[in-house]
Amino acid sequence: MRSLTICVGFILLSSVAVGAPSEASVQTVMDFYKSQVDHVCPAKHLDWLSAGDLNYALENFEKSLPPSQETEIEQTANVRAACAHTIAGIGCANVAYIRAVTTMNLLPRFVESVCKFTCVGLFQCQ
Image 1: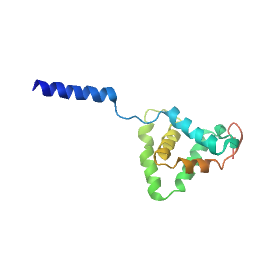
Image 2 (image 1 turned 180 degrees about the horizontal axis):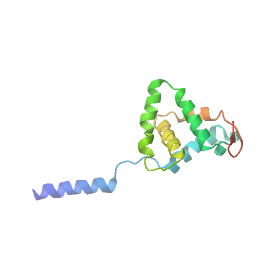
Image 3 (image 1 turned 180 degrees about the vertical axis):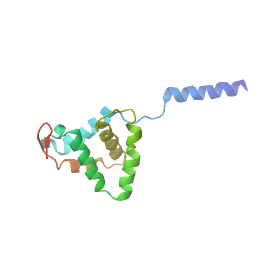
Image 4 (image 1 turned 135 degrees about the vertical axis):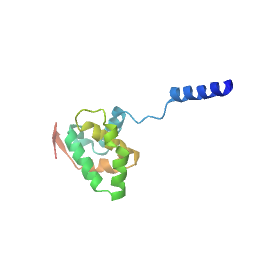
């Protein structure tokens, strides 16, 4: 019995030390998204896109997909859970959706849709 207890204890400690695979950090998600945008349409200055405009682009992209993919994005993003500890702001939802789009291998298509915008100044995008 003692060896079983030691073995179970070792397994539990190992799982805590190793941990479950974590989701990409906010910074990693946004850096990857921005690198893709900068690669596809660098002259558009989309780093000036506001959080609201980015959310608008995400919503339009999602609406352009078949209903099954819309549902999958919503389930994968799981904004309610992802942003449970966020008091206010749309940035958390944007990251959750970009993470979902990336997970679903739709980021290249989303980037192409975002590249339809052009920014001429900070938060001055059409």
